[in-house]
Length: 438
Image (cartoon, rainbow, N blue to C red; front, top):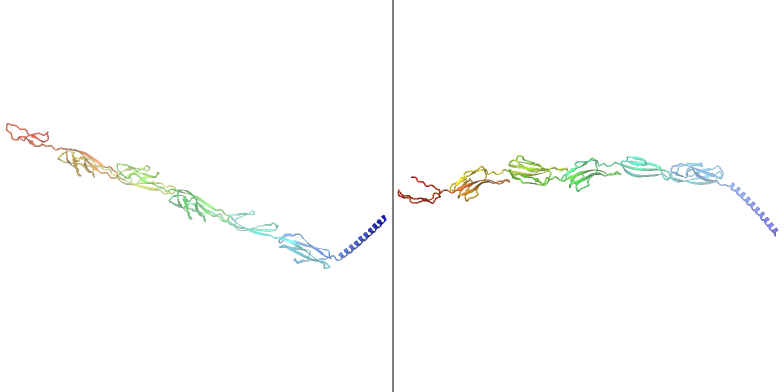
């Protein structure tokens, strides 16, 4: 049994050797045949594969196998060397064809990826100047900035810059204190703007700068020039104060006065000053309005309240008329008269009229003639009527009327004996005296 196993092992070993020998012979002849018929091969290498447009790139064709020498033909470069220099502007695939001495041919390709430069632009409007990329520009125009883009290639950024000058509202001038019934015109050294009033309930302003008062108070008047191109608006302003119109008020006080009297003028508005137009007739206290009479006549009294805040003075007038006091004078003439007589009275006064208080005692006519009526007394008056605020003036005297004496009618015997007597009597007033002519 063991002898059979030994024979079998030896037989397997011998067969294995024969197989390995056979394989060696086959590989030898295969290698010889391959060498005898080897084809040329080529590949392309590059010093750069990703480049920016216009960058120089060296391409190298690496030939192997085949039979040297080799010939090269670059199909899109018309070059016949193994090294060529190219400057592609876009991504380009290059191909080389290699031929060996046995006319064996091989080819290879390589693609050079080209990254493009970038160009961009934007526009900016700025006021007076603009700072960009570390540079301050004060003029309009295209401003260029060269840099590298994200691909590492040249990049040009163009700034289209417009520089605008700042607006100038200027300085406002003109009267800023006005009366509530007035206007004022403002002006400015600026141009191109518009006027406006903050408080139109106090004053308005038109496009020409004419300010019209509305009511008392204060308002800010503005002149605004609108900014453009990135410039802010520019504003000039001033305050206009509107003062209520001045009023001298309503005057009062007695206007017609007697030369012996007095009067005081007043106004519904205080703070004014009085003056007299004709001081030869009357003067007036400037603050109290008390009038002092000088002579008969008329004078215009003026009351002036000074205007403020652009308002003119306001004036009110009132006329005072001075009339001389009437003068009845002094009565003269006989004041004691008989009931059957008359008397004439006179006076130093003029323009008056006579009257009797007791016309049952005596009457008096326009000429001053007193006519008795009966015994008694009566006050005779001479009255001059007052005018222009003057009271009547009266002069008076008392007239006494005495009844006329009466001897009466004598009675008694008017024939008597030479040696006789008789007694006469009378119905006349007692107190008489008897006398005889013989």
